[in-house]
Image (cartoon, rainbow, N blue to C red; front, side, top):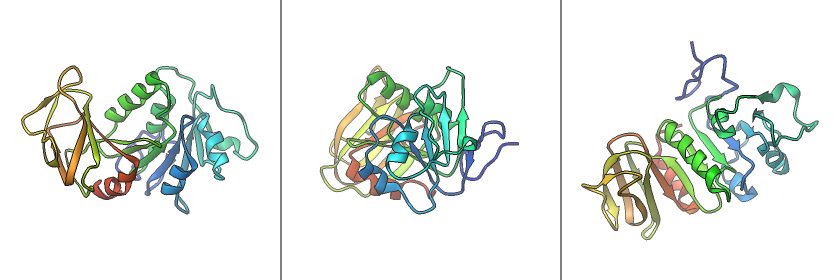
Length: 229
């Protein structure tokens, strides 16, 4: 049977960290200390994806686990060998390796949306395959989440609201300058980037596969709108 501390189950053979509170995941790309300080809390577990361990240590925290293929990990005496989990296979990214081995109500991930387009696309693909609302990507420029089927966001007027479909999906909205009612979204067709809120926003999507992308100052309203972690 799988372990299930939160809402996302993993098998006993792959579970590395299991906690009943949201977990902070740090990658090597663009994690900033200001972003870290926004989501770090006393007692919050921290996982590092491969070279993200150096970022975590620079922020003054020793990760509870380091997961990855270790192609960019530099050993450090502050991290006990028991916390190192090398996954040698090359069929998944370090981000995917981490998501598959964290069992928690939510993952707050920073340091994964960097300058490389191919890395960013791989991360967004993995996000779309994770449960809606479970993982929140945080960067200095954007935050992103796999959109739950229904949500209400308390946004200030003029907030950027981008919707990007990773598959065919439809939706309805209130509080958007350009409503999405009646639109058939598809990555090779209709997309919904650079919309704007007119105030509080409600979203309904017909199924999995829609990414919601907001500016960093909307992190508080986003976390408040997601199902309780």
